[in-house]
Image (tube, rainbow, N blue to C red; front, side, top):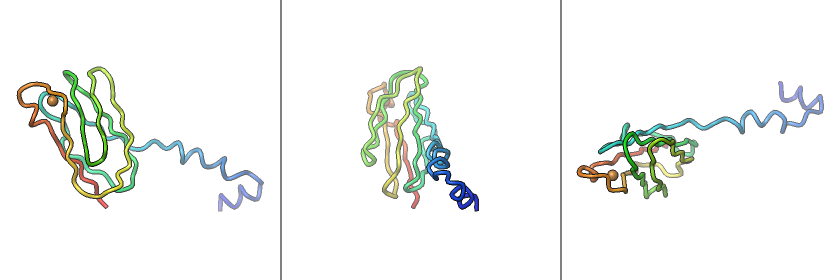
Length: 115
Ligand SMILES: [Cu+2]
């Protein structure tokens, strides 16, 4: 009804679109510290954009999720933001790929993408 009303007034529909386009995708915040990610289990929806916000609490860590083509450093004192729209359903592992000490090998987690 509103759309028809605007069209009748000659208001281009594009004027009503920016509100939708500017909608920020939900954030998925993941902390990193020796020797864990928290949370280390994250669920996303297939085709739904999210922004990973990665925060280190102690030193430089890495974040690598090969199945979804993501690799970045996580530097203390700054948020590392990675936009992502999962295109495959399933469970995908991520892990730290910057050696951070004994226990580094256990620093991992799983993203589950639900269809
Ligand atoms: Cu590490």
